[in-house]
Length: 227
Ligand SMILES: [Fe+2]
Image (cartoon, rainbow, N blue to C red; front, side, top):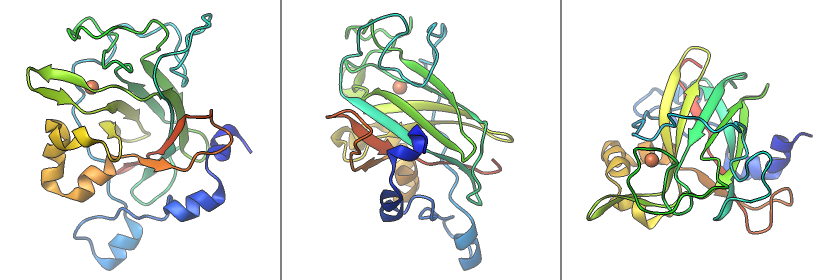
């Protein structure tokens, strides 16, 4: 059993419904509902995709190669599967993520937020999905950040996914986050339907012995139309 298999026990997968098509095409036929999953919505790229990538490029954002320091904040594991609309796993796809640190600051020249930078936080991660379409990042829970005198972005992680046929830019949100309802981007998605915001919101999973004490485990499955 590898690290990604270890993260979720079979019982957890069954309990959560992961892999059993709980998200279906709105308005589709009964047949389509059994066959098709809702494609993960596209969400703005945003202004902070790293112009200069960190030298350390891997799936663990909590530490930098050659440094003993650990990023500040709550450690989280974000893991899931990349699937096509028929539920077939997409292997070998490149998934990039970037995000604010625990203080709500991006390591990006264009970020004028005066919250502190974290010298131990990688801020960007990249991984290829395995033979079963799985990915797994270890990172920290991003902080919210201001976008104006009375507005802020709720915690989120940016994703850029290069599938075999499709490319998807999206954002992953956190469940039960009070700021979600005040976030313009989240609420714009919510206008379409609660299913749309559900599709970009990770699920908090029960902790497992494979992750650090006090760390949180989130599942987010991503669906590309054609894979
Ligand atoms: Fe952002």
